[in-house]
Image 1 (tube, rainbow, N blue to C red):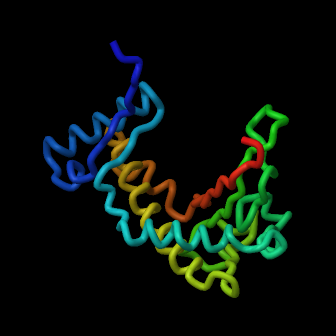
Image 2 (tube, one colour; image 1 turned 90 degrees about the vertical axis):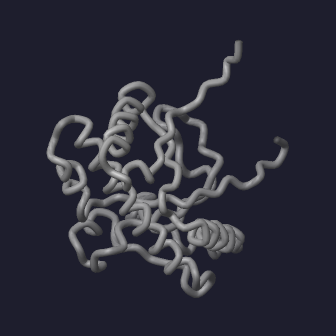
Length: 188
């Protein structure tokens, strides 16, 4: 007997197919969230070239000298926009620092002065050091945001709510994409 467990997996092609396939997709999403709290998505529609470009842009940014990266940290953003350095963030109720650094991108499809940016400020970008970072991360944000809207629609349908209930709540919301980097830790 194996102790291996797997997480539920949904295939976005079933959503697109409609009918019974879509109903199965909706059921799997709802049951997965009720039972385990998460699921994986196959054939999600995020282009492999975009994913690869995002990894490359992230690697280029995180490979910059520490002083350069620190120049993209904004205290007023409280880690919700731009760069957050290694060991800065802590898990809830933990005194141990997380062994990662990251960059957070907020909503990209609204103007910088939009209300969604009031709390943390607008996005800012390492254009001088990594010129491809902004266009790639903007495209990634928009692709993931679109996927998220579909998944929110499936959640509403599982609960027998109007399909747009959760999707419409997220329009113009302050969602983020977090680009993570776990650097090697000496002595481990």
